[in-house]
Length: 295
Image (cartoon, rainbow, N blue to C red; front, side):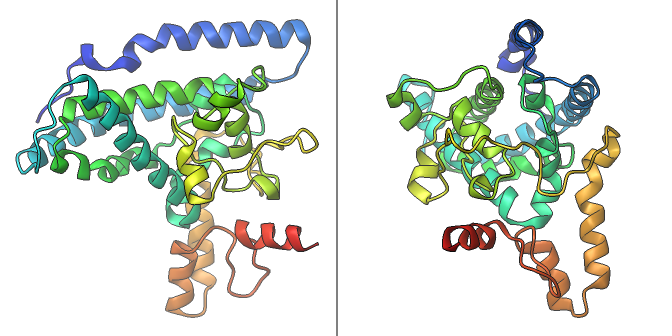
């Protein structure tokens, strides 16, 4: 079993940055009376983050071992060069985009991902509300990269860099960056849209670092001044119980599957987008968005 060397994981060195920036945001929140934080909600987010960290440590070991095995069959020797980092950035970010997008569009994957969206607050502690179930399989998405020739250690480092980048976009204190950056990068403005439950914003802006994929594949939405994001999910769960936060959508899928009359409908409840129903209104994001645009 191959373990990723501790000293090569950028997340380890980012922990003081996480703590300091949360402290700064808390100070500004208190001074300006912004009501960005709710104590129990933030503690739940931190608890989810700690649980995810434990699972992630084990799964990183398995993933690193698997990537090293696949690396034996690589098509190219990309190596470690300055341009290798450019390639791995785009390859990792492209992979993250599709992993993230499909985590919103396939209900079983959504069940694993939804807890990250279940807070009705948007602040830096929300970034720590990471999935437990998602950690069990997400590394599979990146399996094509060692086969192409990306070094597994470089890959794992890039994944950590992407995770660190995605932390700082969970804030309301930064409104807009210069236009050229908003065009290329995932920003707090773009990510506020992603965490919003407004119909216009549902299932939009799946970017990790680069917003270019959303612009290219038709999933981009601009944050509008006249429509403030409403955070949370379309059916909020109103709980701080970590296990309910982590599993509630799996339980809902199970109930839907049991009541579905046919095998086809049972499979649709698992693999269609969230909001599909065999005997009720179609509440899928694209359907709702189409209804809003037509009204």
